[in-house]
Picture 1 (cartoon, rainbow, N blue to C red):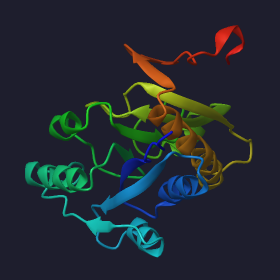
Picture 2 (tube, rainbow, N blue to C red):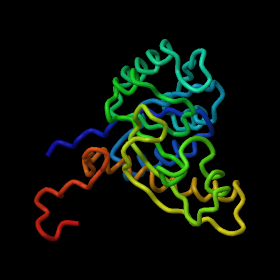
Picture 3 (spheres, one colour):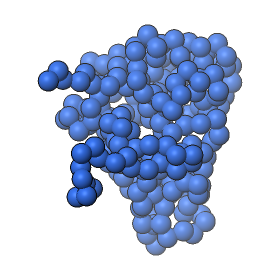
Length: 217
């Protein structure tokens, strides 16, 4: 049987790149049927670019344009061109701090994923761990979702809970949420790439295992 070549990932990030490292390590260990084809950042000295270079992976700074929270039209076209040139199958957001609009999403339909540090739809937007702590919830967590034109509003691929402790600070809670992200994100990306998940409206459901019979999980 001919082996199926691994999927190609394009990773976008603005910061240190801890979720990128989790994805890259899952690829290297064979837990994720993919390889990182390209890492792109909107910040010229972002840690994620250094982490990619350390691993011998292609890494580029692409200027984001004139806006603070999104890519301008020319920048969006440049990002799409870079990802297409790298022949990516899936775009993985790893701390990318800009909203992606319709032109970009139209270039990669249902092929852009993100991880958010809360149990969406609760606490969308920035510093979700701080929002959760200030609200007083007892549990928060992690959500992996497809990206749509809204803010943290796309169909949910996976979630995991994180307990909020009585003595938590925003920093301590954020650390535990990030630890959960590093487990959940690669697993959810792998399930999506392997075709184990199917979007039905807003819901994402597990697809039946072919030939699994009544005992299939």
